[in-house]
Length: 571
Image (cartoon, rainbow, N blue to C red; front, side):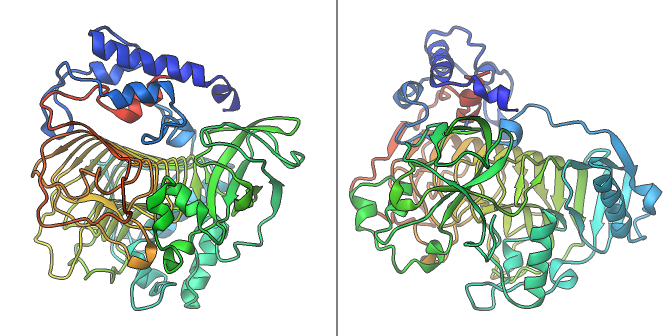
């Protein structure tokens, strides 16, 4: 993997990005951006692409791709940096050989978990679930590296879940107090998490000692420091360390940045400047509980004290933030779920924040993992990323009676890719007192991408907790959800949020047009929208330095998909 990224330079990205822009202007062909030349209907039934306009901000980005003030570089998001194909691991187990029966009545969860354990003991491999309906009265957990749970296709293999996480594990309250259920934003009936994280979380739930769910857990100061890091600027891929003896190519480490008394790290995440400087940070207790910022990244090369990383730095590295590379909970790596439907027994959606835990597929402390061709139905929460990084969710769909969070991304989840996703219109009316968020991001999560989506309900839920540098691109949305987030979690947006080529079918502006909300961010290629039913108030005063381009245009923005253009510029 290291060799693949070693050749990516500012020059190669600049050349590819410039080619994309030039081809769009002149009508020529750029092999670097096949997505721009695609024919046929766009996602969500939008018209086929027509010759469009290249915004000025794209040309600026092509000149400064790793340090642009409004647009983040996300071209390496996803499993194996957005690889087009997932690994095909050899079949090592069939759930039927471990006692699973596709009769819809036999509890097959134990058999499926036995097959997964057998694959884990074999050092990885694929666990097959042949066509049919398999009842599961317990959850299915993947806690072994390089294990893939593969059905025969989302239309052929169904896991029918009869119980929720409250029944299976216990009532999961909140570390922030009150009677909120953390199953509203955590856990899945298919749960991918390393053994250490799983065991500590279950023990904490049963002891009613609610844990921090991230890469270092509650004991956030007990992880080993590998080395301190010298000052560096956002966008750099090579850093200088004090001691490289504990580092080698392929090792996954955490870059940890602590805040200082003046909250200059949080201000930096918000773009610096007068607005963040004047903001009151001290009383945002939920937000400050997310700090230190923890960013997992693989080491690609070590030469003396010079260390090259898999991805560019997401933030500046400054001495006042005590920057260091550390160990972490051993990540789950190389595992996936493919080709199945997880259908929960249909029950009414619970009141807001009282979810019982009929949740779909969740990745926790996972790196380079994936889901492909997976549908979840009748769930409280659909697909979850909890302290998960460099994962890809592709061809996923949330269907059925309606979900609180169809997709959630929280607790410091970074560099993930959700593409070709669908949120279907709910099949029953929403019960009173419930909430719909849509595609969620919160808790200092950064550099995540939602691409090529169709949302028949929901919204772009920036859920406070200062998420920053996230991209939503090439999405059709019926904008009828609401954002969430406790006031103690701080701002809705940090810097470098980008909404690029967004088609809002009901013309509602809230959380789509963000030039008046998000600092140092960009809204590019959005149809005419108006504010109604939800007024989003900016957190920061003064000039937000946010850009609005090609607003209300009838021509498609070029490049059509911001993530794909960045990705393809370096192929």
